[in-house]
Amino acid sequence: VQLAESGGGLVQAGGSLRLSCSASGDTQCLSDMAWYRQTSGKQRELVAVITNSGATRYADFVKGRFTISRDNAKSILYLQLNSLRPEDTAVYYCNADKIVCGGWPWGGQGAQVTVSP
Image (cartoon, rainbow, N blue to C red):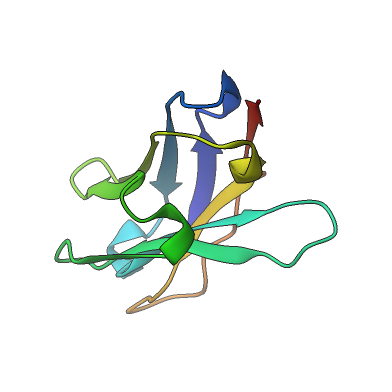
């Protein structure tokens, strides 16, 4: 499975963006999916997870501001980012949190999100 993120950009604090993650290949092997983010010099951190049935969980630092969703028919994962803060500036990546067959997905280049004060 190959993943590709899109939708990043530059936004002012308080603004919104929607990230997309398109999956191709043996997408039937994907189960739970997740968004992560990474800033320079820091470890990648988990942002949100969505199960195959639609249950979600979020990191405390995005609760109430970000929403993860998925369109299984189109094999697309989304992350709606609202009320953005400068500290949300990072490269956002998607990947599987659980697979049911095949190998682990190949990750994409990520989507750069930059939030100005």
